[in-house]
Image 1 (cartoon, one colour):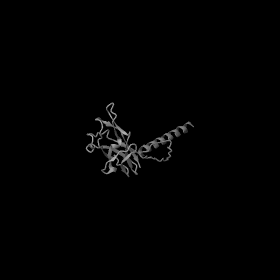
Image 2 (image 1 turned 120 degrees about the vertical axis):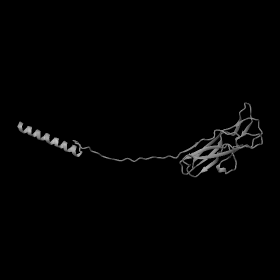
Image 3 (image 1 turned 60 degrees about the vertical axis):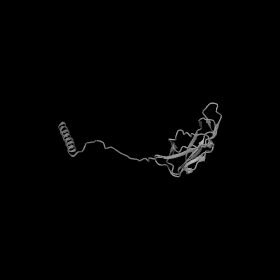
Image 4 (image 1 turned 30 degrees about the vertical axis):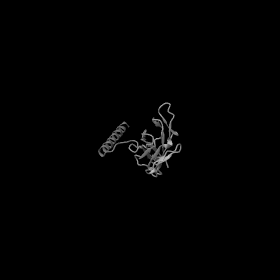
Length: 180
């Protein structure tokens, strides 16, 4: 039996060698196990929310004049950029934070009513309207989304300087951009 076993091993070796040779010649690689595969899918969802930003608002402005004069910001207007993806559009309003502009000099009790300030924005179309503490004044409206880089909004201010002590009178104006 050893003789048959030796022949069987020799034949087996010759067969394996021939298979390996054939695989190399024809570009096949030998693999003892085939890989199993399976597939499935997922859905990518992107939820885009409405957003609005008001940026680049002029930090401050100054109206300078003697009592009775009417200085304006026409040469140096208040500007800002509104950016929104809301296709219904937006509005921009402004409101004085307090009822009065107060003097910087200690002991000066004079005030200038914030309602004495007048604004001219795109909504006003060239006319000036008084600010109305504590009610916001709408200065810009757009019924579509802004440009991708935002919409530049320009406001001009003026005041009839009242008869008060010489001083710098200041007050904060709050701007609000709201989607429609």
